[in-house]
Structures are given as C-alpha cells and as structure tokens.
Length: 600
Image (cartoon, rainbow, N blue to C red; front, side, top):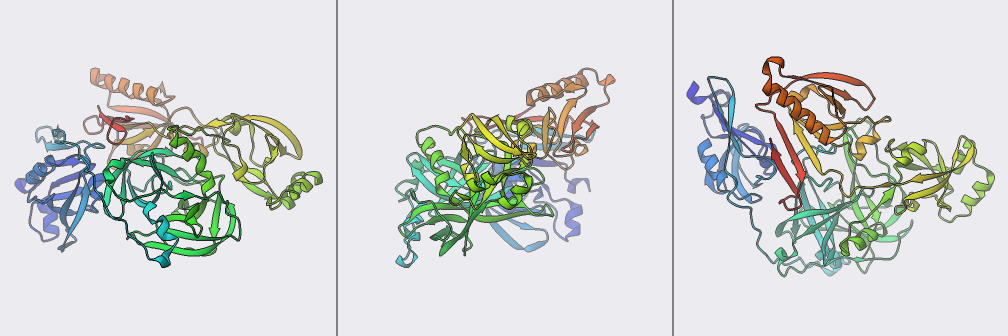
C-alpha cells in the first residue's frame, strides 16, 4: 500500500501534480500511476486541464509517470506555448489536446517529498528553465472582406484579439482569464486599445493575436484610472510584413439620432457588422462590487438601437472613420453576481491619452474622488435651487434640464472626499456650469466650485487628486494571504479609512483562512502597520522571534484588523513557516512580465 500511495508531489506554475494514488484509482476503476492534476492552478488551467485530469504527454513527450513528467517540464522554456494531452477521470474514454502556456516567472518549480520521520513534506527547488522562449518574426495575410461588408473591410486590418491571464487575485479581481477585442490605434509607436474588462490590471500575462494567425506577448502601457480602457504595446518586429494598419479617428462627436456602423470581431475571428442608430447618450450605471474592484463611474455611455454580439469593436461612419469604441463593462447585480454589458464610448475621450503616449509621455490626470449623478430640475427645486439657476440651466443646449449631484464618496481621505458631501448639487466648476459628467475637469490641480448644500449656495476650493500611473506596484504573500496597499475601489467601500494594509485574497488550506478578505491589517503582534514596508518589517521581526526563542513562542501571531464597516477584531493565527512563508511580487521593468517574484 505504501508503494502505491504518493509520497511526493510537484508544484509548478501554481499547479500541483502527483502520481495517481491507489485510493483514487480504485474509486474510478482505473490503473494506478500517471501524473494526476490535484490542483490545476495557473499553468494547467491555461490549457483547460482541470483537477482530476491525467497528463499523458507534454510537448509531444510521453509522461507515463511523475518522473517522466518532471523531466519533460525541465526541457520547456519559460513563456513557451506547448501542446499537452490529457484525460479526466470522470471520462477516461475522451482524450483531450490543448495548448499550455509555460509559467516559470510567476511561480516556482519545486518537488515536495514526504519525510516519514518528521511527517513533513520537504521541498527541493528545481533548476531554472533552460531559456526564455524567443518569439520569431512571422508574416500573416489579413482576411479581405467582401465589398458588401464595408466599412468593416476598411477597419479589419486594425482588429486583434487579446487574452489576459491573472496569476494572483489582486485588486478584487476573481476572473482568472479574460478575452476581448483590441484595435490598433498607432503603428509608430505600436499601441493597441482594449477595455478594462479584458485587461483589468498590470499583474498578468497578455497575449495578442493578429490575423487569427500570429500570437505574441503584449505589455500594458497605460491603464486609465477613470475610463474603461487600457493601452497595450507589442514588439512590432515580430509581425514581419503583416499588413496591419491603425484606425483613422473621426472628429465628429456622436449625438442622439446619429446613424452609425457597429463593427466588431467575434471569437472565431469573423466580422460582425450592423448599421444602427444612437438611441441615447447617458451616464453609465455600475454598482459597487464585492469583493471591491474597479468600476466605471463619471462617464457617459453610447446606447445603440440595435447591436450584434461580438468580443468588442468600434463605432464608425461609412468611410471607416472611428467615432467610438464598443467596450465591455463589468458590474454586479442586486445579488452580487458578476454581470457584463457592452456600451459605446466616445473616441474623443481617448485622443488626449493617445497624443501623450505617441510623444513618449504618460498622461497626468487629476480628478475629484466622488461619484456624480444627474438630478432633474423638478427635484433640485425642492433642495433649494432658485428660479434664476433653473432659467440658466434651461438656456444651455443639450443640458436636458439636469445638474450634477454627489451620489457617493469614492475616497474619504482625499481633499475632495473631505470637502464634498453626498447630496451636494454642483452649480459651477471653475466658473463654468457643469451639467454632464463629460464636462468634469481632468487637468486641474484645484477646482473652484459653487455648490448647493442645505438650501444654501457655497463657494469651495477643492484640491483634485493626482491619479497614480499604476494601481499596484508591490504585492506581498504571507501565510497564504495576498496583501497589498488599499486600492481605489477598496476605499470606496469604507467611510473612515484605517491606516494599514489590505487583504485582497487568501488561499484554501492556508493559515490565512483565519483572516477575512477585504479587511485592513493595522497591527501585527502589537507592532503598528501603516504600509507594506512596515508590514513586511513586522512579520519578519515576529518570524525572527519565533526562530530565536521558540520556547517563548507558541507559533501564534496576533493580528488586529478593521473591516469595511469599521469593526475592529484581534485574530490569533497559527503560523506555518514550513509551508507558508513570505513571498513578494515587485515591479521590475526589466523582467519578462514587468514583475519580479521573490520568495523568502
């Protein structure tokens, strides 16, 4: 029985592989042995090889047992895409083949062997990969569309599809894999734009498919903090003479009633096109998400009378000049189930970002950390709006007889979050009447506002918030918890923001299951925590105390946490330094993915 019970397992790419045990084989009337996927993790999920699968070959190398599997994995370059064959124990008659993305950059390659004298599983780290996969230039021909599909044919050489994979749950994101459409907005420098549903964060692997033939890695250049788009770049030399082209931007702003062409790309690389009408232009409506994650606020959507299903696309005129993007938005319903929907987005809101990036500069944006919504004149009167202001609003074309009011505070620690209050009605910003969210300033360090509060008109000067170029640059893994600085979406959920670090997620089976996600850690063993640096010092200091004076420590650590409802708790957690230590992801521009993995 001992000889047919696994005494070792492999960790690679966040996946766990061991020999198929006698107990499990008996349950399925199957033979013992063969590399069994106990946890598909990051790497094998890229090939849709789920838990309870048996791997029969990797990169056309047979893997009849765990030793053969280990030797096969040692030969694979990091970042390569290789075929694997496998079948699932639930259906052993159906063998499957898929493409796996080799991950040796986000996770370690280790073998754990059981020590029968101590009962521990001791780790041995495998050698680094033989190389990093080197992509070679290729040339592909782009499909020529029939004349009846114009103007889709004019834009088709600008379409790409994008795949994004998330190795760790950060920023409240739980979708480990997303696919979407992208459009080439510049060939020099090479720039592609897509929605934040497809590329939600800088932590992950991005792959771009051109002409449904060439797959190359992409890199995030800019993640817009307000609007629902990301800008990617790529190595243009890898495309050879592929006849791609950038889209042509229109100067026309779409308005209600305009005729427009919706041109999109489907998952099978077929075009989708529909001539339709702009039904209305209104504020985008998204809900707070749990766990907290980025959502679109303070932006207008373009709704169409009819649309066709696609991964995404553009809104254009008959000449193929792009007037808007067709993007996927993420939100949640009343039951906190994730939902997504597609809306149009004006191309005029993209142009300032593109102009900066083409000059080699990152856009510098400023904003008010509040969510605005419209209020009708009929309601504003009951809050004390004078007839004089009603006449002024009515005299503005396309105002729809609305003003903006503060619906929600997005960051109570910011200057605008401290000065503005929910219910404030904005009359003017910097001397200009503001009736639409598209008129909110994004380039001023201060904004002078005239607001209506409690029936009185008040003048205030508000310092705007400079938005960070990247939402996250440092992540710490500790005892099975992912710890990061509180991000914007997390700050939206709490009124009195504590000083500390934020628990983004925790792993099953780890000591961190004693903790809750979405809470702040403010103290470790009575050591104050204010940021990631002080947190790292605190956990290292306590770990050192345990090793130096084991007789004075029982292996537990006291952690003070504060929830988003400002409830303070002290949690006692049993540490397991053998299996669950400290690791870090640190931004590194020279690394393959822009991140460096450090394990202590």
